Length: 88
Image 1 (cartoon, rainbow, N blue to C red):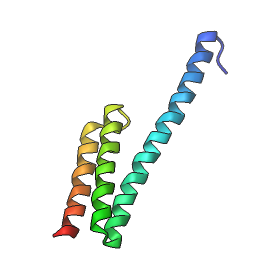
Image 2: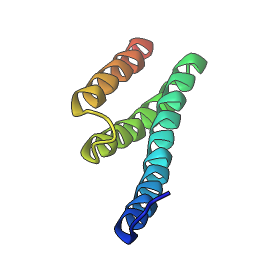
Image 3: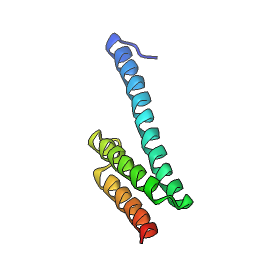
């Protein structure tokens, strides 16, 4: 338990931020999963649209320091490769 008012406030802020980041991370991972599912189904058009959304979510996560920007770039690259492999 926090002993001071400032420590209490810090605890409240940390909890609020943790829940917000958790939601953002979950949204990002869900989008990545949707791309992989679309590729597995063989739906090229759906995979393209889901990939565009996943790229956006990854960039947002990197901007907010949720994940490292190189990790976002790596994920985008791998997903792009996956989507392009089914098109060709």
